Image (cartoon, rainbow, N blue to C red; front, side, top):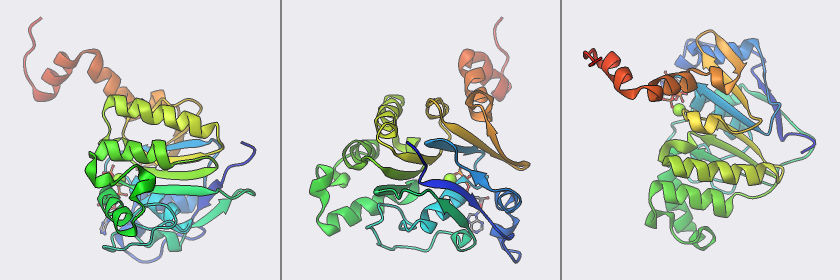
Amino acid sequence: MRDLYIRWMELPEPVPGDSYLARLPVVKHLAERKIEFHKQVTFFVGENGSGKSTLIEALAISQGFNPEGGSRNFNFHTADTHSELHTHLRVARGVIQHKRGYFLRAESFYNVATNIDELGIAGYYGGSLHHRSHGESFLALAEGMFGSNGLYILDEPEAALSPRGIIRLMQRMDELVAQDCQFIISTHSPMLLCFPDAEVYQITKNGIDSVRFQDTDHYRTTVRFLQNPESAVADILGYETEQ
Ligand SMILES: Nc1ncnc2c1ncn2[C@@H]1O[C@H](COP(=O)(O)OP(=O)(O)OP(=O)(O)O)[C@@H](O)[C@H]1O
Ligand SMILES: [Mg+2]
């Protein structure tokens, strides 16, 4: 891929006022330094509430996606749950435009499935997504509907997936990366973070830093835990362990 569809995003000015958005550390950091995209796959990791959804949702809306998720053809509307960050954002696009795309918003995937049924286009998805489990329907989407030259903005795609489901998603992503797609993903999955040649931005109170996946808190905590689960659990719960 010669160029990315999204090259960088920035806040030219801090968000004015005293709203939660103006006070959110990630938003303040973005006003100090732009986030550059260097790889076809970019991950955002960070604690619950660190602002990953706020960030990638604003990016998705700025690119014309429906705030509640879906491809750019979706414009259903059930509730105003997105922030106004997108109105402050400046985004640099590459020279070549993406041909298709999808914004996965975990909280409203159900509504996307309903909208697909209502539009009478379930046939393109291999049938109604409501007739499959949450994970099955997401994989049907990624395997059936995601295609070449696409921009995919995904908020915790692992939420519905088993470990094998995550592996299938990684295999599909690998195919799509070879077909000039760009992925911008928020995740808590240490497995997904291992995707090759991806850039990982870790969001903390101190900033938004590009790190190796091995240095993320998610990866380290999980590895430490799984290396010795009995002792890790005993430690956390304050139990004595047999030596
Ligand atoms: N409408 C709102 N009013 C006040 N605070 C809000 C509102 N929406 C989000 N927030 C706060 O903004 C912060 C960032 O939320 P966000 O959903 O972006 O976090 P996140 O990193 O995606 O978390 P998670 O990993 O749990 O999905 C949170 O502390 C949240 O409570
Ligand atoms: Mg979130």
